Structure formats: structure tokens, C-alpha cells
Length: 256
Image (cartoon, rainbow, N blue to C red; front, side, top):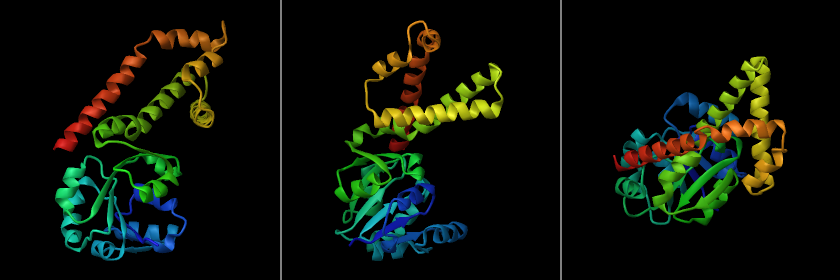
């Protein structure tokens, strides 16, 4: 059975860890002592400050450090990596070519673009290239899709950055509710639960979104009255520009 290692024990790494049933085969490396202790207590796994131990002992290694720390970690583990090992990077902006340059030609490398919903077991992860073991682990923490690396800038814009955009929409809905006379706490609850419930329904009942919208918009009803304004507003163009800007920045970071 493969031993799973983590280089970095931050929130995203913890989200993946939470989906692993047999944590006896997990070893994590983290330089911050407070984080090491917190992870050890919460998950009952072995945590060290020695990144080299991960390279020596683990077959499947998740790279979950900050982009600025990649070169330092790579220098420490590169001489120890072997062909039978797989390095799985969830580091934003680090292409396969950059990872190969940093970690050398021996180890197999998989790149993943996750999002923060991993932390509640509902993540969305894009993977390149295809790797069954990686898909199995990340699939237990949400959904996965195997794509070409050329698609990763779009993935970053849509699902990687997307949680902030959905949260912004939720915030705006709540603010509008307050203007209609609701208490802020009530408006926040209504907005949050409506977004959560709608997302859950659409996930569990995959239907055409136009059909869903039409079903809620009873002719002459309240939703239809609201959609008249939403449809006329430059909402669609704003969303398009938002994702385009995020994708452009992702490409710039990848090329940096």
C-alpha cells in the first residue's frame, strides 16, 4: 500500500487529508510548529519538520507549499526522489515544465488545480495528466476532471477563483435584502441558505439551467419580475470579464 506524503500542511492539504480513510499511511512535513501540532491533534497523523523524510518514505507526495517556497523544498528533496514516486502539485501558477525543472526528471509529476471547497469535502479539482491514484484520493474530497494543461488558466478562473465570486453574489443578495428592510443577520441567512440549497439541488438534479430558471419564473410572478431586471443588467458581461481577467492573470503567473 502506498505511503502518502505531504510537503506542507496548510488548509488545502488538510482538506485532502480529511478525505483519506487510512491516515496511518500518511506523513506530513510542515515548517510552522503551531500548524504541525494542530494537524497532529486534529487528524492523528505523523507530522515532521523534515521535508527530506517525505521524499525518503513516501510513494505519493502532495506538494502543498506556497509558490515562493517551491524552489527551497525542491532543492531539499530532488536528490532523494525516485522514478517509482509521484509528485502531485497543488501549487498555483507552477506548470509541469516548471515543476520538472525544479524537481528533476526522475519523479512522475501530476499537476492539480483545486479549490477551497476541498476543506468541506466538496472540492473541484482539475488534473493533468491522468492518474488513477490521484483521482481516487481527490475524488473522495469532491469532484475531479482530467484536462490538458492548456485548459488550466480557464479552470483557475472558473473553479479556482469561483468561490470568491459566488461569495460576492451572496453578499450582494444579502445587502439588497437589508435595503428591503430585513435585519442583516436574517438577510445573510436567507442568502447563504438559498445559494447552498440551490447549488445542492442542481448538483443532485442535473437539468438544463434555462429550464430550471424558467420553472422558477412563474409567468407574472415575483421571480419573473426580478429576472426582467437581471436580464437587462450587464451581469453576463461582467461575469465574462471577471473570468477573463482571472484567466489572463493565471497565464501571466504561469509564465513568470
